[in-house]
Image (cartoon, rainbow over all chains, first blue to last red; front, side, top):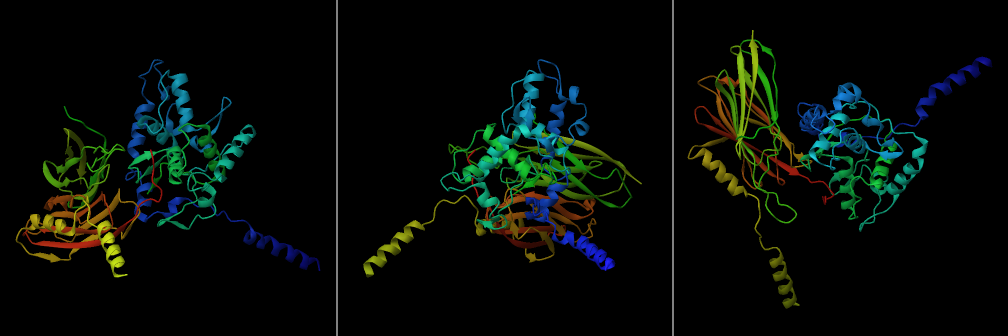
Length: 253
Length: 109
Length: 147
C-alpha cells in the first residue's frame, strides 16, 4: 500500500513537467528568411556593424568642454556595458529613463555637451554599441516598485485603442500574432533586438522609431520622441519580454 | 579632396599555394539611388559607389561595376587563388569624389 | 442599358490608362542584355543563381551567382551581369573575373523595386554567353511610416 503511494507520487512528479506552462513567447527572428537571419547572426554581414564602429569612435572621443570621454569613466565598453541595455528603461535619479535618455544624461551632465537628437547618427551609434554588449543575455526588466505606476500606464497604453483605425497594440500583437496583415506575419512585438537595422529604413533605428511607425500605421498622432508615454510603453514591453534573449543589433525586414 | 568611409575585409591570414580562398568586402555607404524623393517631392540626388576592384600583388582578382540597384553598405563575397605571399588591395570609387582604399596581407605556405 | 455599359467601360478605360511608370520593362531589360551581348548567341542555363522566390523587403536582397568553370587562362568566366526587369534601371551590377579569381562565384546584396524576373548573364573567355532567370515576389511591410 505504501509502495503504491510512493509510486503514485513519483508518477505525479514525472507528469508535472508535461502540464507546466510552456513559454509561448517567440521573437520575430523566427519569422525571417534564412538569409536575413544569417545577416543578423554574422556581425560580418550585419550592416549595423558600422554603427558599432562609429559608437566605438565616439566612446573614446574627448572633444567636449569637460575633456572627458565615455571611456574615462566606463573603461572598456565590452566589459562595463555587458548586460546594461537589458535593464532599461529604469529609474535613474527619480526619473524613468530609457537607454537613449541615459546616454544623453551622461552627455549633458558629465561631458557638458548638448543632448543628441533621437535617430541621429551619433545617438544610434552609441546605443547600438551599448546594446550589442548585451547580445545573448536575457532581458532583465526593472522590478523597481517605485516604477509600478509607470508600468501600469504603459500597460494601459498598450491595451488602448488609438488612431483612425482604432486599433490597440494588443489587438494585433497579442490577439492576432501569427496571423497575417497585408502579406506579412504579425509578430508578437518583443523589443529583443533594438536598435535594429531595418531593411525598410535602410538604416539603424530605435525602438521609439518603431513604436511611432506603428502609431502612424494605425493613423494615430505619434507620441514625441523622448516622451514619457513612449518610455512607459517601452517599460511595459520589456516587462512583457522579460527573460527573452537579446539579439541587438537585430536585422528586420 | 576625396570622401572616404569604413570598409571591413574578411580573409584568411594564411593559405596553401593553389588554394582558392574566400574574401568578404563590405563598405559603409548609403548608395543613394537617385530615385527617392523627400516629403516635399524633391528628388534626392544619386550618390553611389561606381566601382570596386580587388588586386592581389597588383593583379586584378575581382572587379565590379555598381549601379543604384546595389543595396546600402555594399557587400561582395568573392574568391581568389593563393599564389604568392603578398598584399591585396581593395579600392572603391564613386560619385562626388568618393575613394576608399584598404590593404591586407596574406601569407601563402 | 447599352449606353450605360459603354459609359462604364470608357470610364474604366480612363482609370486604367497607362501612367508614367518609374520602372524598366522586360523589353528594356532585353535591350540592356543586347548591349552586352551584341550579335552573339546566348545559351540558357549553366548558371547557379540563388535569389529567394519570396523577398521580405526589396531594399536588401542577398543573392549568390556561381558558374562552374576551370578558371584557367584558356577557359574562364569573364563577367557576370545582373539585369532586373522591373527596377528603375535594368542593370544592377556587373562582376568581372580573371583566372586568378579561382572561382566564378560572387555573393552580393541588391535592391528589387517590385516582384519581377531577374536575369544573370555570364560571358565566358571565348565570348560565348549563358543566361538564366529567377522569378521573385517582393513584399513590403504592412504599415507605412510618417517620419
